[in-house]
Image (cartoon, rainbow, N blue to C red; front, side, top):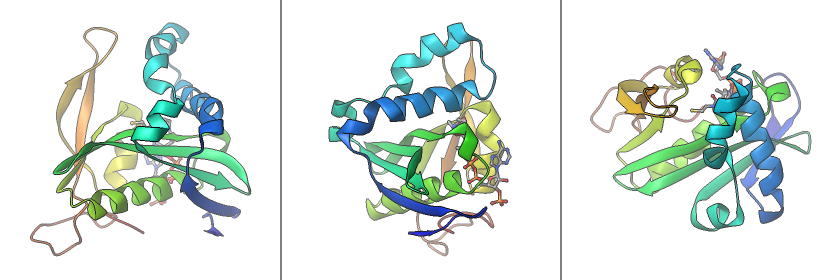
Amino acid sequence: MSRGRAGGNVTLRAARPAETARLTAIALAAKAHWGYPAAWLELWRPSLTFDAELLARAWVRVAELDGALRGVVALGGEPPAVELTHLWVDPPAMGRGLGRRLLSAAVAEARRRGAARLTIVADPHAVAFYERLGARTIGEEPSSPAGRMLPLMALDPRPAGAGRRRGKHGGES
Ligand SMILES: CC(C)(COP(=O)(O)OP(=O)(O)OC[C@H]1O[C@@H](n2cnc3c(N)ncnc32)[C@H](O)[C@@H]1OP(=O)(O)O)[C@@H](O)C(=O)NCCC(=O)NCCS
């Protein structure tokens, strides 16, 4: 357990099957925070849903703030390219360092797996957040509704000095 940036005790741990409904609610609320139309949120609901099967096959970690579930992160894929498939912070808990903590844990896990690249199909509103933590835009990916394109970002999880440059805020903090 450690102190969050704006106070409060922050704990990271594995997600539990009994928490899937709460994790889905956090994902939907976080996405809705950017002001998307309700019809788009419905379209995206399947990709914002956590279920027991996802928890069984993927690396999924949650953040508790003062004992309450407030954020979640998940990884998919296999090295050399591991993908960040979920990163959601409950809107009332945004801006308190949980996103940074969750992304840092995912970077550490990607490094542990020996990945050379962590890719992120980013919400456009979150690009500056990922840049702040060392990611760079490397392309774009088609999304939904038809015609919508999303930034494809990448972050090198290997230790600084492993033959490349990294941003001031890259990696764990
Ligand atoms: C993006 C998100 C995960 C960030 O989580 P957070 O807990 O609010 O962010 P943190 O408090 O850990 O911020 C970490 C750093 O990024 C910066 N930051 C956070 N959100 C930012 C944004 N939208 N734009 C620019 N900078 C941002 C913070 O100022 C902070 O900088 P500092 O530590 O150097 O002062 C969270 O806002 C969220 O869930 N958003 C909605 C869902 C979403 O888009 N998720 C990403 C899907 S690809």
